[in-house]
Length: 232
Image 1 (tube, rainbow, N blue to C red):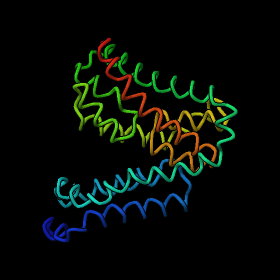
Image 2: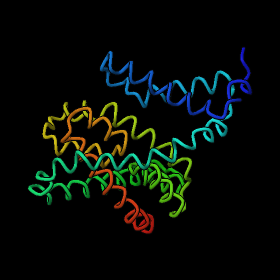
Image 3: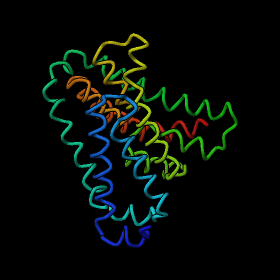
């Protein structure tokens, strides 16, 4: 069996593993269109299995993805294009859209805090849960500022995004939510970047509304999370 030292000897090995795993996930999804084969979820499983089977260092793998970690937040600028194309929708329904984003953000933070208190969860764990629906860079910093456990928050952000990206559209379909604006707002407010990627697969309008919701929900989380912690 190849040793972990050999597998990660190349400084670009971790980056190639990430890109390769995502490419496999994308091919599987394109061929099947199964919701539970979302590329992010498939790629995550592939990377976890490889790191575990070959006993590879996560820290080394993470460090080798430094370039990708730096570039990815910048790609959010691309989401401005579908939003610009649908600016007439934003002008027409602006008040309802912003109200929906605020409601979604407050609800997801409030319910997770209430649920944690109800089942007797440790206080530091509860406040680590509060920013889970914001995009990762914002959630990490908010968790650190309010006294949470940032690694726990990051893990929950990923889980929230993957679950939302996989099951979100299907759940809304079951609940009879057909309006594309409402669907996009829900995905962006709760499932951040992964949800936005799924929304873009559904339609450009949904993707643009989701990208707007993701950005505003992140800002609202940074503002409201400390207030919620004070109330707790």
